[in-house]
Length: 223
Image 1 (cartoon, helix red, strand yellow):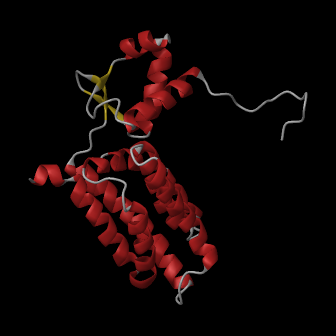
Image 2 (cartoon, helix red, strand yellow):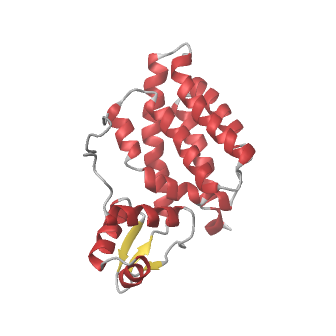
Image 3 (cartoon, rainbow, N blue to C red):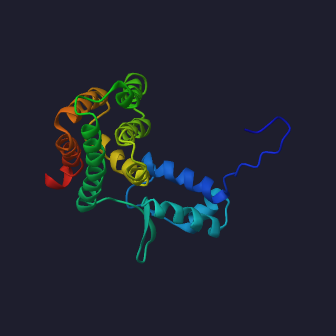
């Protein structure tokens, strides 16, 4: 806590971190197309920054797998192919399934209110957006991802939670493509049903739930 009149020594965002934040949001909201080239010189001119600062920001996004270096093209916005989508879903499934296995072993008679409460709060946020801001898919997909993170966090395993959080940007990028196949309506109800299935069916419910999303995300290449 900073007392009145005392200097604030909390770290301030650098120009590179501020640029990374701006570019991240542009990518996740779809302002930059998947596969679009992000040229250092163009970004430096647009934001009035040095190419070194731009390079640092792009390196931060590359660490989050939101962009990647492409031979002869420079840096491009990540475009997940079917194999990458399935691999990401398999990883999410492994983490969430283990969290659910822990929860069901710990609470064989059903998850107590203390466990369910933060998950239901995350679902309530999705419901609020459905009612008041259904067209803001960036907010909806962030809230959607938060539901799954709340399920994982409920297991009380710091390692599993940290591993899941390390995927946050990739998961948001993955979910950002979901609205091309279905809207926000009914998302909260779906996840309330999902929560009930997790208690009854355990990890099998995780696989069924995530496989349904995978089918939507790869649908274009299957038709």
